Image (cartoon, rainbow, N blue to C red; front, side):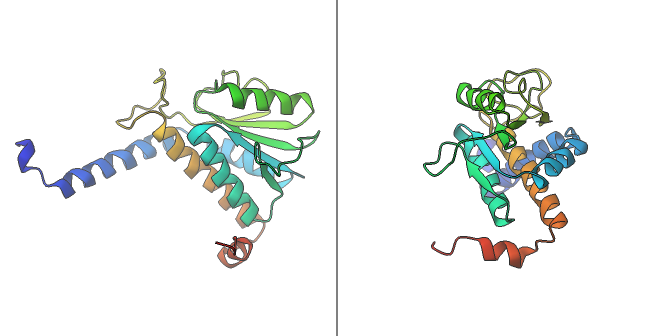
Amino acid sequence: MNETNVDPGEQQLDLLDVVLSEITTVVQGVKREDIERLADVLAGASRIFATGEGRSGLMAKAFAMRLMHLGLPVHVVGESTTPSVQRGDVLVAISGSGTTAGTVRVAQQAAAVGAMVHVVTTDPDSPLASPAATVLVLPAATKYRCPGEAMTVQPLSSLFDQVTHVALDVVCLLLATRRKIDNAAAAAAHANTE
């Protein structure tokens, strides 16, 4: 078929199908018990901190926001109102490569003061995973395109970011179910100053 005869809507739909297929492929490789384990840890946490850089940082903020909607005590590392991390706190650190210097430093510092570090990454042997109590491995492509990662037509770490968002939303869904928080209760905690 000649490129000029392709319906732009059909081409967009095909790309949507490709991206959804990529997400599905990665999700099939995620260990469900790792998602459950993270939900278990967060359910018993006195305070939760979330961190990441770039788009991983945006995923961390989205996760923290949803945890707040569920009534959990959560902070985003780097925000001006974030308190110091203490012994017994929980840190969720997100980095596709597991080598992002700022995220690795935060995880190491949190572990050094006695916080429990939980990592979301593609590489269970990465520097970020080193101080972690648990690692949620999402075998998605990152900007480095390492062996073992699902391949993608998308740029940089888009696939990792998408699967991170979905996996952490599932963690939140598990927590909401356990805490008996429905949509109305979560909505009541949503910002009312927008």
